Image (cartoon, rainbow, N blue to C red; front, side, top):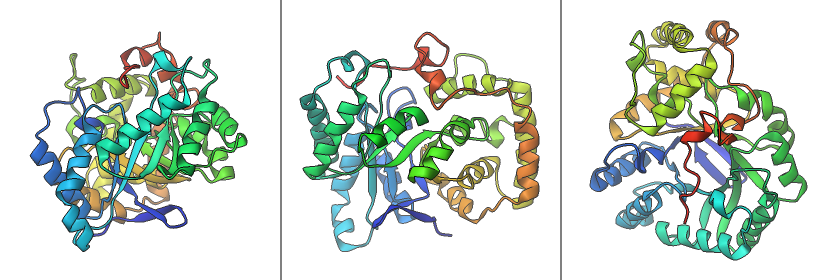
Length: 348
């Protein structure tokens, strides 16, 4: 089985399943460096050549840099396919009011050093709070660094449609938008799809299996009690509440299980295929912790949900209560349940 690919730009191809890096950062359990690097090699060998990380994912850029260095001979010989590293630029909340071009350049240079590369394939720009108006200026700083050759492509993450339009109108060459999208969370569809189609800004989607909640592990299982075992589960348990609560979530899992039986796969694969079939979705980002997940991920490419499958899913989704609002709106509210679990100053 092969992993499908898609061109974000002419000459820039990525795998439709992206290996996520958030789970390798703090708050998700211990990480064995040697095993993590071996897993990265196995993913690339299987065709999952695109990696997602961030300047604020503690230790992850450095870890990927060590992988690139340790396997450089294999890349140079062609034994391993070329890979694409997507990182992020996430200025600290405390720096938004005073952010300078030098601040931006310093963080981009640090990512280059950590990864051990001369050019960043894709830098995805994030901004915590639109009440600080410097996001357009900061995006122009990224554009200048792109013109200098330090950045190949510019993307965004967790921007809503209104503010994407502002960046586009300001001349920022955006090629992708990383956002949360799943059978539980359709804010991207309601808020950003029309703009994405108008300006050809495809989605790179995280949360497609809700940190592992959308899986057979939780089918007919009791509602897990706090403390949950990692930050992902804390985040996505709140999304389940927005969707309509744990009982409706169980109805959804049972519906997904019946569809999975038909396709002879697991619930998680159906959930990923569902997102990949959505308009303007280029890839899903999956935080698979190790290479034992590769065989299941390879099956996703062969799943085509038919009209009956989609209608069955819609019958549950139509009963959901949310999440409502624009992309990342709930998470931007620092006083709310979603915003209160965020860490806003990890880049210092």
